[in-house]
Length: 123
Image (cartoon, rainbow, N blue to C red):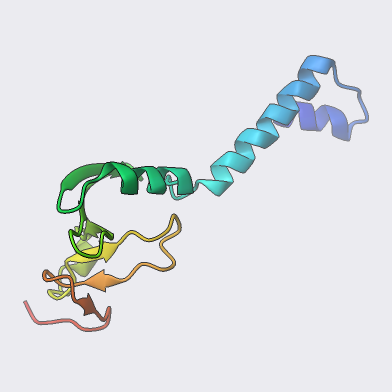
């Protein structure tokens, strides 16, 4: 696509196929920007419909396999926290999977009680 942009910058005209390629490139670029977290609203909704309450699944996102669980009472989806950066936070076991950006995610202990991120316990 950069070759086509260079042609345009030089004032050269593009063929119909080149214009179509540019448009497809913009569409793909927009999609990749909107799905940078490798999760879409459609995918999250589909996961919510597919995963039965009280069941586990393996979830692949951002080149990482995660265990997800749908709580039987709240019907909320949780992801098992496996990041080494959380290893000193013994009270953080689950992260809620509420949206595609993670901006409204909360952390929970093993009994699904909300935990504060700053609370850590010695090893």
